[in-house]
Amino acid sequence: MTHTTTGLEAPTTNKAAYEELHTYVAGGVSSNMRARGIVTPIVVESASGCRVRDIEGNELIDMNMGYGPHIFGYADRDVTDRVAELLGRGHMTGLPHRLDLEAAALVTELVPGIEQLRFANSGTEALMSAVRLARAVSGRPLLLTFQGHYHGWSETLLRTQETEGYRPRPGAPGMIPEASAHTLQVPWNDTEALEKVFAEHGDEIGAAICEPVLGNAGVVPPEPGFLDLLRRRTRERGAVLIFDEVITGFRVSRGGGQELYGVVPDLTVLSKAMGGGLPVAAFGGSREIMRPLAEYEAFHAGVYSGNHASLCAVAATLGKIRSSAALYTELEGLGAHAENRVGAAFAEAGRDVHLERVGSVMSVALLDSEGAVDHDGHRRLQTACQDRGVYFHPVPEEPWFLSTAHTTGDLDTVAETVRECLAEQGHGR
Image 1 (cartoon, rainbow, N blue to C red):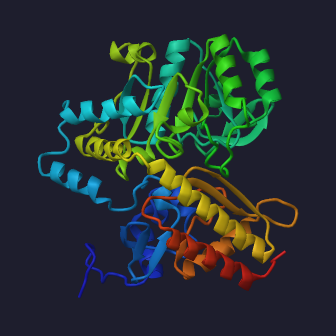
Image 2 (cartoon, rainbow, N blue to C red):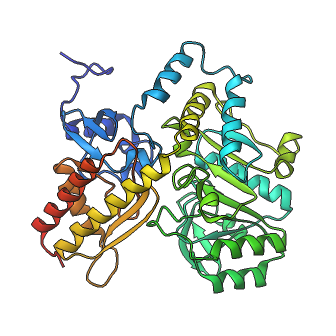
Image 3 (cartoon, rainbow, N blue to C red):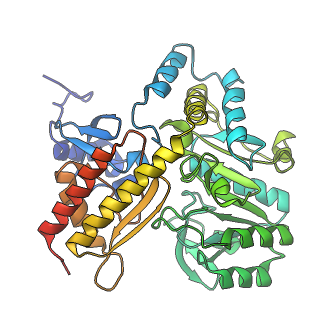
């Protein structure tokens, strides 16, 4: 008989296991974002390639891929074998390691805007540190952000989309309301609003931060010229431009959004795809902007920042990216195939959909008859697809992520499953 560590018999169904999790883990998960991804519970037993297997033995094609890190799929042996070998030699000493050089050199080679960097443990940590450094460099506390862009859950950056004038509200209970006094927010891709905020506050803005492609409120690429305008205005007014490439880094191109759109920021934040699923992030820029950290005039720390296991995964993942000449052509082909087949499934069902893709990141959001996102309908669709062996996030604003482990056959199965579930639900309007 199998027992849990508590001496209780191990649950054998997803529902029972998820309920037991609530006894020991607050809310059953260690991230509020993760809880949003659960309608019908899945408790994972294993994951490989583009599939996850739950404790009931069900296998699902995964279009979420751990929220995006697994560009080569789950359990990629080129990464896991190297990390496993490293673990046997000690993976956390708190001292410099040869992997620091290997991983950092690969990042600086691949990302146009980075000459030097610091490693961190998560996107939130790296974003906090980048904003703090930008304020130290510019000497100004005011931060310009854009509606819908998610930059982690720190006191500095978690804000609602709603604003009073330019002022957004704190994004969670317990946050200090006064922190919003140092944040401005304008709509994404709104050239007029961007020009206006710099005309009114340009001498106060110390930094501006954005995702090159809005990724957490539907995939919304920049309008032609918008990033160029943002680059010009920040440079003219002495503000630091930060690109949050947690999602876009190594996903939309080898050099991320800045390579794809030809706009180089002052600071770049990376995470997710760079580490093949291990917890790691980085922030960096030119030697000049990183000088305060290099000379210990600015502050950044973290016991596990740059731990050897995570940097081993970075070195293995980025080394594989560098040596894979056809990688982004392959991902583009898979993305186009998925976009076409899934789009056809919605069209055949007579349902409207927000379908947008940049490289291997795709937004699929069911719309209602008035063109608004149909959250309830999308969740019903997601539940029906999950029951048939296809997983994507129940929240329609969350992207789908493709990997080289997905095949066109897998994507055909996904599209056919979506088509069947839409047909069964009817128009639902």
